[in-house]
Length: 400
Ligand code: GLA
Image (cartoon, rainbow, N blue to C red; front, side, top):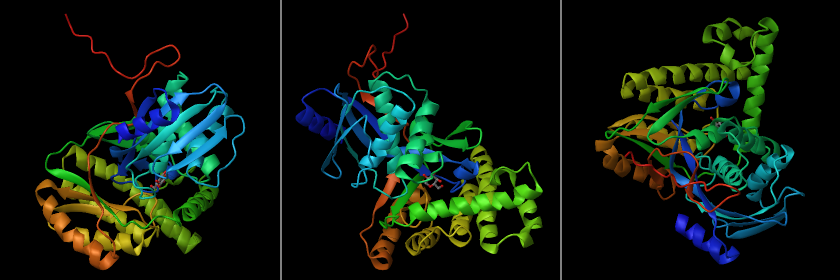
C-alpha cells in the first residue's frame, strides 16, 4: 500500500515525498468514557492510512485521496468547509495550525489505506493524526506529541463538528507495538500493558453498517451525560464529571433523575469501573475475567447507553456462544461498525467457520473479519530532507 501511495505521489507531483503511516485502533474496553473524563483501553493496529507529502511555497493545498479517487485543491489562508466530506478531516488540521500561528506555506499530498471507513476503527483520527504529524515533520514545527493529539481532536470537534473525546487521537499518536494503553482521560496519564500473547487474538467482525446516526446521536449522549453531572453538581459542587461519581452515589439520587439520563450515567460510571478492573485482570493474566468485562460492557452499551444495533447484537450474541471466545462487544461510537472479540488462538479457525454463516444468513452480507495485530502509533516510513534536519530513519550506533 505504501508503495502505491508513493508511486501515485511521484506520478502526480514529480518529487520525492515524506512518507508517514497512521494506524487505526481497537478499543478493548472503556466505551463512551473518554469524554466523561474516565478510562479507556485502546491499541493501535495493523490497519493504517499512509501519507505521501511534500512542501509547496505558494500557499496551495493539493490533495489526492486514493480511496475516493478524488482530488482537492485549496489554500492555506482561506480554509472553507468542503461539500465532499473527506477533505474536512485534513482542512481541520490546517485550520488548527493557522489558528495556533504555526506557519506552513502549502503542501502536496496523496493518502489512502486499508482502515474501513466508519467501521469504528477510527479512520478519521488516523487522517487527522497522520496529517498533523506529517506537517509537523515537514515544517519542523517541533510540536510535542500531546499537542499533536490535542490539535487533531480540536480539528474534529471544531471543523468536522463531532464532539469526540480524546481516545482515538491519543492512541493514534501514542500507541506502541504489542501493548494496550490505559489512558486516564482526565489527567492524560497513561500506562502500557503488554498484550503480546501467542494464545490470544483480537478479532473484529465488521457489520458493514456505516454509522450515519453516530454523529448526531454521539453529541446527544454527551449532552445527556452533562445534564446528569449538572444535577449532581448542585448537590455536590466537587463533582465535575461522571468520573467523580460512584454507583452508590448515583443510586442514592435515582429518584431525582429523569430515568433516561439515569441509565446513561449509570452505564458510564459502571464502564469506568470495568476498565479499572479489566486492567487488574491483565496484571493477573486472567483473560477469562477480562472477557466477562467485555460482555458486560456490551450489555450496558446495548440496554442502558443504547448505542448498539441489531447487527452488532447478533454478532456479539453469536460470538459469545462459540468455543474459545473469551469476550465480545461492540466497539467505538456504535450504531454500526465492528464488534471486537477476544478469541483463543487455537479456536480462531473454528470461530471464523462459525461466525461466517451468521454474516451470510442473518446479516445478509459477505463476512468481513479482521484478525488484528497491535502495532505502533503514527510514524515516519521514509525520510526526505526537511527544513534543517533529516527525520525518520534511525541510525543505530554500534557499540565499539
Ligand atoms: C468515537 C470517539 C471517541 C470515543 C468513542 C466511544 O470513537 O471518537 O472519542 O468517545 O467513539 O468510546
